[in-house]
Amino acid sequence: MKVKESYFSGLSEQIINKAKWSRDKFVVFNHEAGTGKSTRTHQIIGGMTKKQSHRVLYVQRFLKDDELNNTVKAINRNAGRKVAISITGKDTEKGKSTEVFERSQVICITHQMYIQVCKGEHQHLIKDRDILIIDEFPDLLEKINISNYEIGLLWTECRKRNVPAIEEWAILLRDLIDEGNVANNVMRFTDFSDGKDQHYEPMIKSAIKKLDDKNSKIYKGILKESLQLTKNGGFLFEEGFHTFNDNRQFVLLKNNIILDANAAFDYRYKLYGKFDLHEKEKMYDYAKDTLHHINVKTTKNALKKFEKFVQEALKEIQLEGKTGILFVTEKANVDKLEKEIVQYFSDYGNSLSEIEGNLKINIKIDYFGNLIGVNHYHDYDAVVLLKTPHYDYLTYALTYQYYMRLTGQPVENVELFEHEIVEAIRKSTVAGEMYQAIKRINRDNSRRADIYVFADFQEAIDTVVEQLPNIQYNKKDLEEKQNTGRHYDKTKREKSTKSEKARTILLEAKKSGIEMMQKLELRNLLEIKSRGNLTKILDKLEAFFKEHGISQTGQQIWFHDNLKDFEYNKLCESA
Image 1 (cartoon, rainbow, N blue to C red):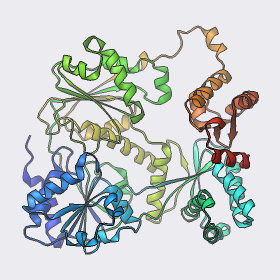
Image 2 (cartoon, one colour):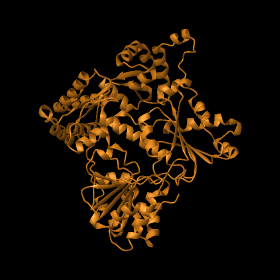
Image 3 (cartoon, one colour):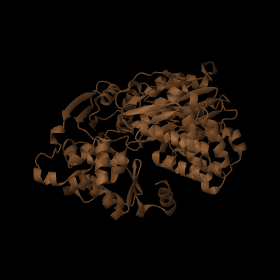
Image 4 (tube, rainbow, N blue to C red):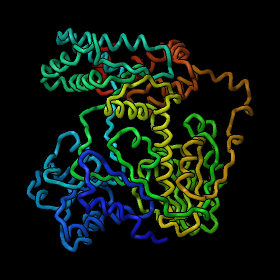
């Protein structure tokens, strides 16, 4: 289906007409994914340069696959001359002349470079620029974590250097952790900017200035993170403090535009008054397409019980008549998924490429977080989402904190899966990842597409369905096929105690070469809800720990043989 030029008339007017410009807000357009918003924007910018001298900073998400240079070529082609250049981190490292930037009417950079501009770097890129156009949401959140282990390192170093003020800070953090060890499902917010805690910020700044030798790099880093904690407050959770870096502030020019197909349902746009959404109608009708929702838990723990999940999932997929099928999973699971697909279709070949040839269908695997803006699968007519694309819950909570602080609003404690705003962020983020993955295929809506979603997050799926007008929605349950373990010999299961399982898991982790494992990860693998029950198990393993060079500090389990000498020495000092 060809998209009418008038669909982008509002965007064109916003770029060209100075009467529409605003210095203090982002005008956000949510043109439907697959309608060619990026291509049309390049055309508008190129055409504008023929008649007007407005200077543009264009920001896009990716540098890979030469995408930044392709954007430059597209703008120059539409301008009929060279008006655009690209700037990357490598260009700034080489000391490229700023005169080149200043002469160019259009500069194209990545989101990462824009973030650096928001930190106060590379200010020559915005000098005398008029228009800022950002393709996809610019996420400025930089998470900071100060663990119990790092607090121990800080305390050790301060005692060595005789800095009692910082020793006091480390003890305060330790005391707060001890006090907060009651509720496992609540992220308790602590504000250090009021009353009796205000004096810590100048003390930490003073200590940072004194740490100027090369051996103090780690401790200086912990102090800088502590400074962010004193300014912004943070969540106490799983024996650590979590906050964000506030040195990233949105940079705006005379005219500021964001292009984001998710904008109408991405909850972050509702949290900041400088986002002004100009909502666009949907262009495509999906009545010929089907979304197959297979209701099944896809958490790590659930899939461990469901050993043949991929094999069962593949049985649900109809390949007949399809030209291309895209499988989407998490990054860490890509290779494993390919092996399982090859195993399932082994009658058709010994490799994915051989199977593709014999089935006469393109089969590709990609992962969440790698798909926004990707156009490689535009003519595929089936997509399979085999994982619910969750971030860790702290990401949602810290996003909430970031925007509350940005807008001067109070931050509350966050109860997991109960806090209204955090849950809205979580739902819209998961829905956004799903929607973007789905819209990688059948980009022009000219084919009949089948969409398979294996997940149990109904609210997120409902949001996705709302983005696909008139789509046929079918739901079925795959829960009954999960391995509950009921058919196993009960006596054998009882012999496999939690302690024995813990030994096996820890030895496998040590063998893999990792230096440290979080206790929370071990708890999840053992399917233990209570932190206290895990402590009882670990206490029984004292002799086992000594035998295999394993120790525990705070919420971490360390494998000494895998540690670098420096880290091992520091661990011993903090023990």
